[in-house]
Image 1 (cartoon, helix red, strand yellow):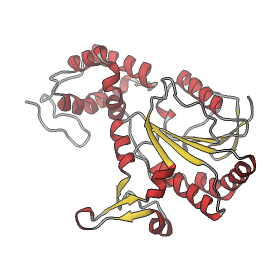
Image 2 (image 1 turned 60 degrees about the horizontal axis):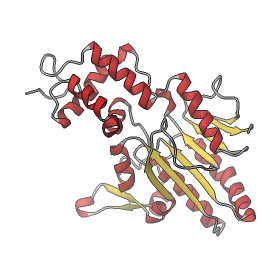
Image 3 (image 1 turned 45 degrees about the horizontal axis):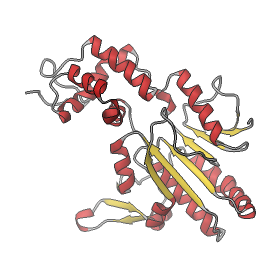
Length: 291
């Protein structure tokens, strides 16, 4: 019987299974191939601690058995594995300057252009995690549509690899602490406060659910959608990827964006030296310039 986890998710010394070097090397290669995540040698203890939880959940006694599971049926565990080794840190209206650009410049322009052309507006939240990003996007999109009395067909696609994150996103229920990044005015308009057994929780407004489609997707695998998208948000996702994976991914994003389409990255991410199809127009905001 294994012991309890410490605060970092690691079993007490000597009380749990140990991740041997051969199994660690297999996991490194598997994660790089299927998730694009490059795990350095220094991640050995972190991987052991994070995956100990998966062993316990699956009733496995050692990491070799877990590696055998991946060999025999890689796709069944892929989402859980990716969730375990990556950190899902997100919040409503994180990197607020991106939303300011949407509200003050991009959405008014796009909606007018789409209205005149009879075209649709599409935004993709790639790596949407637990849903805060696409629902924040839905808030500013819904407000833009209302302020212009617009009937433009506008929707947001939200995708992620993690089953747990997608489950939370689909529920759209968050603790009051989690919605702290939303202004008081938007909270009153777009969040429904719980009471009784739901005290301390808030649910997104049904209108936001109408605008957001949530689907599982591995960014390294074939994509079912053909675009085009007016904007793609891929923030704080590629920090885990190696350089070749980043180059392939951004090329694929460019293929789904028209010239003039926008790509939003996280605060520590850049296209410098990776892709020359975009120009930097703001803080981690890129516009496609080449076909």
